[in-house]
Length: 180
Image 1 (cartoon, rainbow, N blue to C red):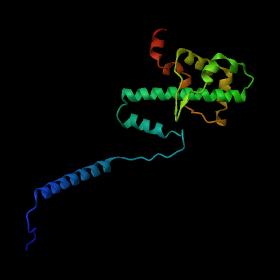
Image 2: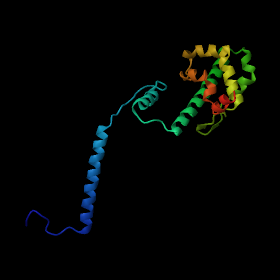
Image 3: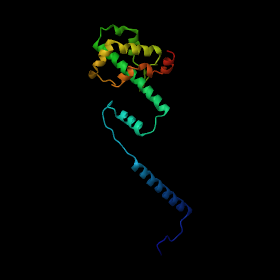
Image 4: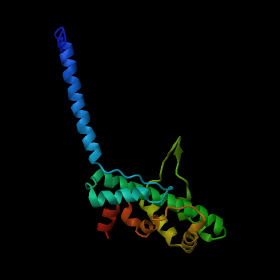
């Protein structure tokens, strides 16, 4: 009739009580760890720079990028360049329908939309021919004029910088540069 149980705890009850104490201690530790984290909510429309801000924060305050992450950035840049040039091809068709560049072999190589399989898109292979066609078209006056009208259509703005150095973001960039 005191303040304790009238019967001793079974082994299962002791095990469960110890497990509960361990879980409680882990929860307290996790709560402390979470409370020490700085959380930031970035809001904005598409292509407004939210992920760029996060990448810059990581460069300044976080861990270095792994080689796999850097390789994925390179692939993203290449895909953005392809999308950029395909968009410009459509714009050149609309703004300069009589331009001779529309019948060039380079235009046909770059303007061909990538294949789609279900919900995924297949990007063209970055062969030397494909990169050379992109470079030639990018330097063409009709494409520069179309880019100047970029406020009239949606385009990934920072791709301009990569297009000026497209040979450097190609998969064969190092071998191409070393052979010159």
